[in-house]
Image 1 (tube, one colour):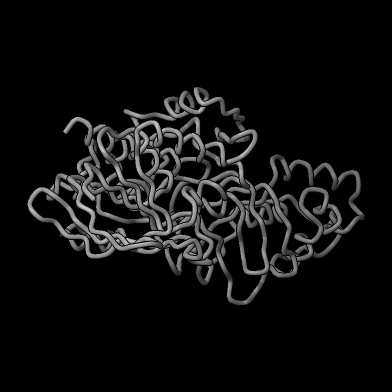
Image 2: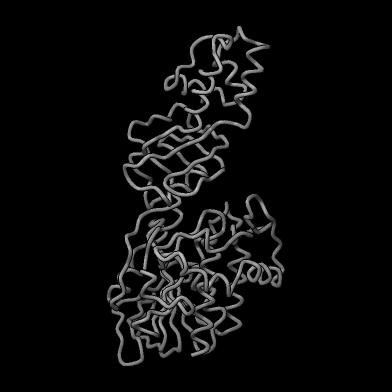
Length: 391
C-alpha cells in the first residue's frame, strides 16, 4: 500500500487537509465514523468558525506562529466553502457561527471534498510502528479485516490532543513528535470547568448569571454557571485556559449601574432587607449563598454609600481558588502540544523532518471558545495541504 500522503486522524484538521490534497491519499482513524468531535460540537450544530478569528484569540508559546496559516486561509474562506456546499448558517453571539440544521452537514461537506480528491478513508483502524526509511515513512496498519504495511512520502499527524478520552483521544501525536526528535510543550486540559473540593456551590447548582471572569489573562464577559462540582459556563471555560493550579480566579457578577440602583431603592424601599432588594439584581438563590460570604445584614436604609461601595467592590472582585478542573474528561481542547519552534509556520512541517506534518489540536496552538479551534483546524490543514501539493 503506497501513498503520496498518509493522514492519521479523520477529525476536522485531517479531513480538511485530505479534501485539498493532490495525489494518492490515505486517511486513518480508530473511530467508527469520521469527524466525531465535529458531530457533537455546538450542541450538534457545530460552531464551525468565528467572525473574529485572528491570532490574538489563540494561546501559543510563540504568539506569532498561527498568524501565517490563519491569514492565508481565513474564516471568510471557510464561510465561502460552507456556502458553496449549500449549508445554511447563522451567527449566535460574539461572532460564533453555527449550522442551521446539523453538524453532520460539515462532516458531509468534508467527506465530499475527500471523495472528489479520491482520498481513501480507513476507519476502526490503528497505526503502529511508524518508521522512516530514506524519503518515505512506513507503518503497520491494523484494520478489522487484515494487517498491512503502508508506505507514504508524506505523513500528516492530525490526531488531536488528550481531551475527551472516552472518544479515543490520547497523547499519540506527542509520542510521534518525540520519536522524531520534536519537543512537546507542557500540556493540560483547557476550556474546562473548575472544581472545588468542598462542593461549595452545590446549593446553587444550575444558577447562571452574566459575569466577567479572568485568571491571569483576558477578561471574558459571558455567562457563568454554578454546578455541583464548581464553576462552568462560557466565561469560566475561557478563563480556564489561562489558569494555573493554586492561583485565584476573579469573578465580577455586578450588573451595570447596580450601585445607583441600590441607592435609589434605598430611598424608595429603605425598610426592606438588603437581601430582598439585592435579589432584584441577582438570582435569589445566589443572594442567599452570598449572605454566607458577605455581610448582607440589615435594612437597605441602614446601608451607607461607603458600605454599598464596599459590597459592590467585593462582588466585582470576588476571588475564588479552585482545587482543580474536571480534566481531560470534559475539556474541550488540550492546551500545549508539539512545540511550534520545531515547525514551519507556513507549511506545518517539522523543520528537521520536512515530510512530517502536525496540524490541528496536536500543535501548541489553542483557541478561545466559540469556533476558534475549528478555524485553526481548517487553516492548519490547508497550510499542510498547500505545502504538500507544492512539493
